[in-house]
Length: 470
Image (cartoon, rainbow, N blue to C red; front, side, top):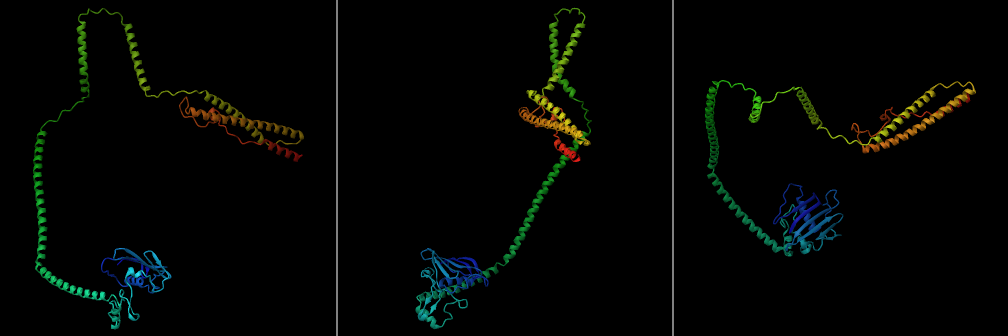
């Protein structure tokens, strides 16, 4: 029994899978949708007939895959394909080099759709019918029908199928008569139940009226509740109106004075009572005392009292200062500033040196910018050369001093970096110290390296000019 048919690039089917159910399977669809192609595929698998036309346009290969189930319930797979020539694959075994109508021996053991060979070389296709003559042997001559029944081992099965078909036709006609009779009965019953349609409509209308009545009943209940609530509210309003009339006859409340003074006095009453009790006790203890002696001059006592008052003022001032100083932080820990003082002193000396050298360089620059002297004689040339040599010597000294100052400044920078790592804040003002230092921190002008004035080149040019003029 065929369970599944799969067509790949076969005629109009790009990829179609049909899973068949028990019993009879009918393919229904419009024209040119591929119904006949399914029957042609089964016929090609059964006969390996001429199949050069079945490959889909532009496809390199077409395939037909069948899944079958035998009488024992075992599943088998049959594949037919065509590239340049047809081939079979039955349960994983491949059969190649098959000519047209050449089929493997095991094919019809599983498929069970062979062609019947009759007497005289006649062949009968019992399983596939042409579209124009779908009924087997219906339009065949009697001799061909006799040959088939005389040679076919399946003739008894065909006769049994014919008898079964006739019986089913009779049963279908009987069933049709019963259905017609039942239909007539149902129609008469429906005619009897025709008034029920009007009753149903009336019931639906009655249900709608009942819903409206229920809605109005609920509305009446709500209105009654609103009426009762309105009555209660009117009673409350009348009661409040009467209270307002009574209250309107009363005088206004007196103006209330400030009660803070009264509260302060009330707080002091217990203290005063205690003080009165102490005074009474003191009075009782002083009743047995003699009269006090006559007092002498009180000037000394007044001075002592004034001193005590001044001392009390100083104490109050000290207490206020202590309360103000209590919010201050602890004084910073003062680090050793000796190294910092030495760095500042060195910076001061370097600043003085650089200022002195800068003045010398400025003087040399001014001298260099002076118009060259007239060299009328050889003595003037010698004097000029001597001056140039002296200027060259002074320039070399200034350059050497500047290099020394640069080295000292680099050393101070290294020492400064080491110092701010241990003491990042100023010990006097506690402000962050700068990460780099300049000569401006030593009180002098910021050091700026002047461009070097090449006195030798100037002297060489003057010597060439004098030799060319002489």
